[in-house]
Length: 123
Figure 1: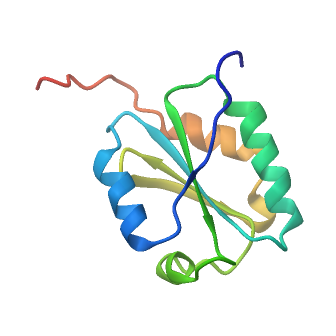
Figure 2: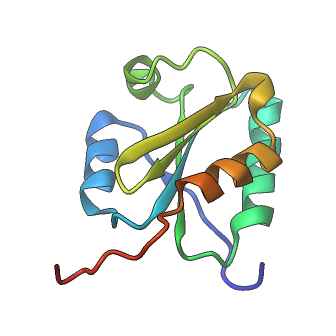
Figure 3: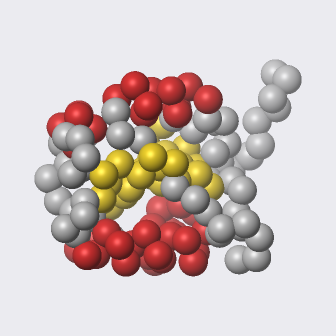
């Protein structure tokens, strides 16, 4: 896609996670990627997310490095790497991890998570 490259927002604590989802629009699809410095596949997924979603302003990407803090990995019971959770607004739509995680599956999960209608913001 053309346009601005998608940039991850670092979310490394429960407070940062809560604050992010307090401000997200109900029509926004968010990818929450759990990563670790030792996980080579996590780096590949990062690059593929940039390639697939740059220029799409309806997609946001938050990143939690489990080697920096285990607060979020414990909260979400992250046991397999890499892992990407997909949200519509603040509602979890799906989760992919380990061998299920391919860019094709992430794109499919995003398409399934996209709202099928626009909500009236003034409603």
